[in-house]
Image (cartoon, rainbow, N blue to C red; front, side):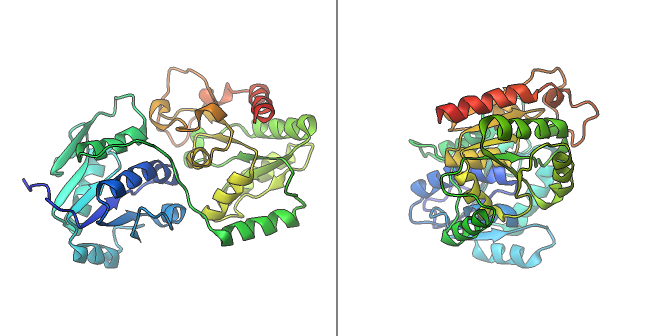
Length: 345
């Protein structure tokens, strides 16, 4: 077994997962910078997740890998000869463990560190134990790596990045839509990675109508381009006309727009963790996901989570026939939570 390097001059952090996981990794990146202040820290992630942390001062270089066929990226990583390589994500399956093992072999590096999920991290030199059955937040699992390396955390803060250009693009779009600086905007995210975690079409429509009619504020629907058909169906069921920003923003512009919102309403998704990093008040409709592991973190006093107890949760289905965990959430209770947060903040 390789001995831990006495001095770490370069290290690679691997975080190949979605936007939410990237946001939840930022406290660990900050802790690594404090633990190894002189080291060159590189991050390997996918293209979409890279944008949300580009400019983060804890990282010296970001490399992207969207496919294991990107041989040029793998060759560049191997050439770097990192003193330490760290995988921040869990090994959910044996197949996933083999893929990560092959990636580590391609990257090489002197010392391998990662989460030994249910004993699947056989290839790591430093194995950080964890079980899928444990009830702990994903952020804490990532920070366990820092603890295993001898580091400490005083402040745990989520971070996301945007710049002046992103502000200008969003501000210009809002101006064209007639949104003034003092207007109250409630953002409704209708986008989830897994359709099973999304709310009902009629729920979105009734909720948005109630907010516009009863609270006299602007409602803006958010999401990615693939959700345009969904939003068209929602708008057909509405009496009032909402703002439609689905597919209009890139990742960094989306971050700035969320900061502009007075409140966010969203199912369990990466958008929730972005909003947490910004301190945006939010109502979260939490369905079949792992609540203990992926609940909103660090913004609890500004967050109301609506979650129904059902026997079949948690589950990892992409599509569900009954979606009883989401169907049992009513637009009346979401509206009540919205009204409560808007009056408080």
